[in-house]
Length: 99
Image (cartoon, rainbow, N blue to C red; front, side, top):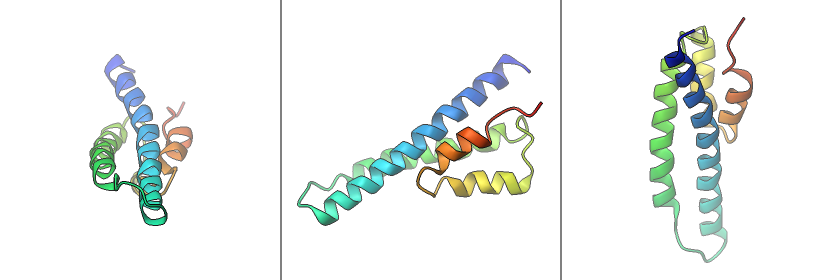
């Protein structure tokens, strides 16, 4: 496999984890704002998370052929991004090269 594909795969794995963590931060900020009398950080964190989410989607579509995902796997990887910690699950179970 070319070094470009390996680098793309590494970027995807890192972004999958970062996306999951940013989603948890967004949910935490939302809960803290609703329950406590805290500053509303949701718009700022939401913007950052949205950008990371779009990068995740772009990379997921880019590594699709390299990882030999079928349509069902690709749809699952995309849907997993809207589930808390779904990106971590994808990184652990869907981002490995098939031998």
